[in-house]
Image 1 (tube, rainbow, N blue to C red):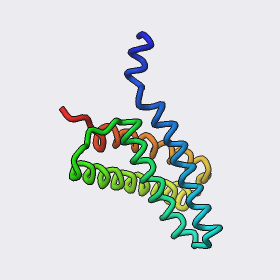
Image 2 (image 1 turned 60 degrees about the vertical axis):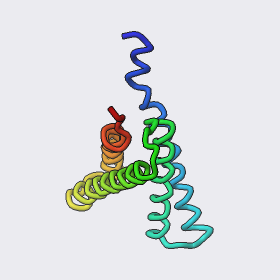
Image 3 (image 1 turned 90 degrees about the horizontal axis):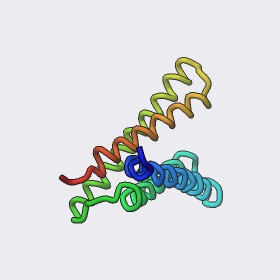
Image 4 (image 1 turned 90 degrees about the vertical axis):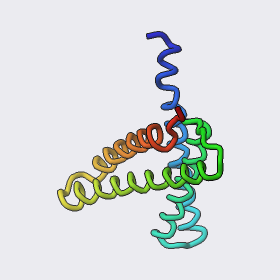
Length: 137
């Protein structure tokens, strides 16, 4: 397989990884800003940080990763709702993994969190590629 074919096959993965790291930084920075300088509680800060991070991820994934073809207001609204719903669903997967494997089965929390995050990243990529930003035929 030549380099051009490899690039075409994996051209979404590199920017997805870069913006994934930046999304994580947005989440942490917004959480810190809400929880510390602004003095909000842990849960409100976590929720606001999640919303900011998912919004940032949507914008960057739409434009620079999956090159969205949604142009009308209705298409974009449908895309945003789909993106947030999928991210909420994978957030539940993360929570369920932590609950089952750490709280119930008492496995190592860091190992499980790492594995859960890998699973969530893969699920988010698949949902984005096959559902949210699916190319029009």
